[in-house]
Image 1: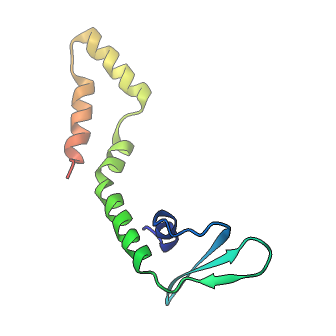
Image 2 (image 1 turned 90 degrees about the horizontal axis):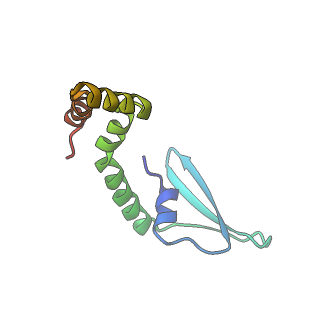
Length: 110
């Protein structure tokens, strides 16, 4: 789940010289900016329109890559793949290719 603070950083709304405090409560997320010069100046972001648009965009990008994340954890380790390739070359089999195709079939690109 993409948070508002991630959307804040990615939206280009970041103010130089300010640190960010992000809280999440039952009534929603809140972002407070604190000026880093020791003055004690803080301001709360009240208009989240652009930030929420960015959160929606980032979440859609993340969701679209679910198949890739699933594939990455399903492939055999590099060592096992190299072993399969060497055996395939030696024996004239297609074990490695079949293993890769099984993962791609299980998690197809959308």
